[in-house]
Image 1 (cartoon, rainbow, N blue to C red):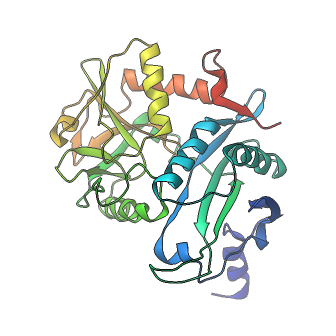
Image 2 (image 1 turned 45 degrees about the vertical axis):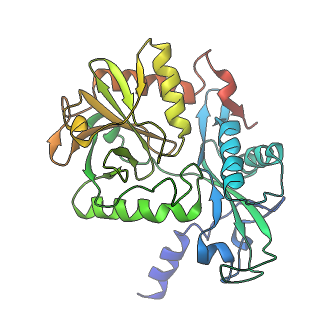
Length: 318
């Protein structure tokens, strides 16, 4: 690699860009937001984080379900006995600040809390908690066509977390090794995403998304055992009930997905994403079904703050 190619590659990294990051209560230059290589969370994965989105609405940028994401961050910290040194109000205000100060109309926002480099090993004492919040423009999770055509999914050979091995209700840094392995496996098999089963063989979730089926006009989703309590999942359930759709939360078998009328993933990054195929079996019409389309349309109207209902879900930035 020559010097010019090296410069181009460096300029494309998240570490090298203009802007500011909220770091332990202060705004610091983007390039100066650094941690030591012996940072405890870097080695052992004990930290908590969120993924939040701001949308470019007709009334300026607005953060979708900000307070719900922050509340989940604090629940995750409580589960892991992680002492966040700021209040929920302060974390909410900081997320608004980083979007505004970086002049973003739409953004992906990443709050993350981690332990510093005061010690090493599982028995380390005196570890200091830290908190960062960054915001940047992030392209669409998949191609725009995927929201219509749907995606190919593979059932993973990796089992989703067991509820007494990993604290499944915590959005913890280390938990996502499981997701990354499953997603890599799916990519290598020519698929776009993975579907993970729980330790009993029932459908759990995607690598970073909750999953829904449409069966005879009814919305079905796995009960929350080994699954994360998705904010988008909760939003879609609320929207479905507005449409008078029956919603069932129960165990789902893998072959139920094969014969579903429709299926889709939900998540902050994925939004509402149709599934056209699982393990080589076409699902329904082989694309976005009518119920998925209606829920997807309603979801985008909601995040863009174009509905009178649930206006409190959107927090203005300016």
